[in-house]
Length: 127
Ligand SMILES: [Zn+2]
Ligand SMILES: [Zn+2]
Image 1 (cartoon, helix red, strand yellow):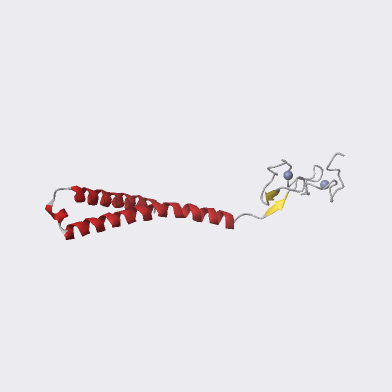
Image 2: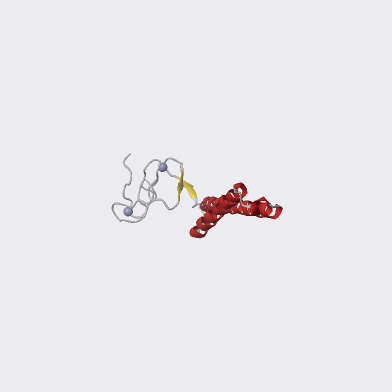
């Protein structure tokens, strides 16, 4: 896909190069009306190819950005600093808190805002 665009771009550039070269050459064929039209058509086609290939290389980037935004993971507020964070994060990138802490006593999942383990009543925060 990428190679095809590069080839299209080079072909377009070559067409422009040849049409410009033919236009300024002393070839009698390029001085006739048909020769001029052909040179103009070749140049316009080459320009079109170059532009379309330039835009073709830009479009996937835009699409990628849209896809990234569309598939943006659900944001949840950090239980400590309230900053929006990715639900899949293990640690808050803003305050550094462990978002999926384990109880040091029974090793079960507890919430970072829990003061006491709901399973074994072990104190989770020193206050
Ligand atoms: Zn936080
Ligand atoms: Zn526990």
